[in-house]
Image (tube, rainbow, N blue to C red; front, side):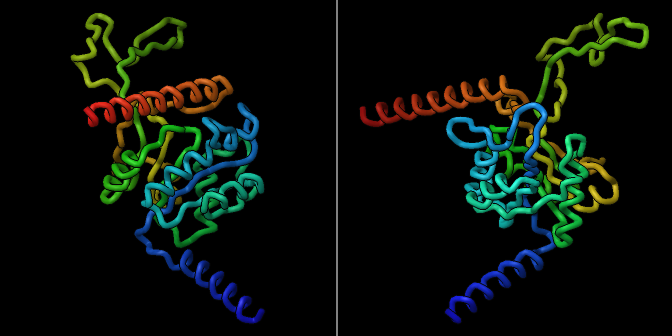
Length: 259
């Protein structure tokens, strides 16, 4: 019994020290997953193709083997238990930083204040269900020389708005010379899939981006965010479609290799 207690004490102390004395240059993965949600009840635990949104993101991060420390910041014991099942570290968030009107920036700041050795982090949004290993690797490479890196997708949409006088006016093009898709580079639209940033950027500049920033351009088909129940249904269809396509390609390759 004494040996078992000694082993557990050594393990806990060693685990705690490994977090407290991690490298200052190491990037920690962080997921904000509060229990409440306006649009979808328990959104972070809703399932797509049999696995929760939180579980999907944690699976991608685990399989990438790119982060030694993967955190889930939450105010929910239920979410905390799910996070631990996937091997994540849990930060129990102060309820004041888990309100409907709490910004991601405020929640990240609360996490950083509790973990003083975390100087670089990668914030992942588990409602972006098409996160890929390749995107994360690109972001980490860019993050080596930048203060921040975020996900964006390219858009060629022509945008309009109403001005102060109620007139409809163009925002990103000249109506007299409407651009063809092949004649312009389009615009980069922030997707929210991930934000890599330094502690100093968040704590002292109070933002995720500055002039020393870069982007990882993701496919438009992967840019979907789940905010409503309709999004959940659409995501289920898209995932099934991607699986069927992958299985079809696999079968085609097997037939070709056997011929």
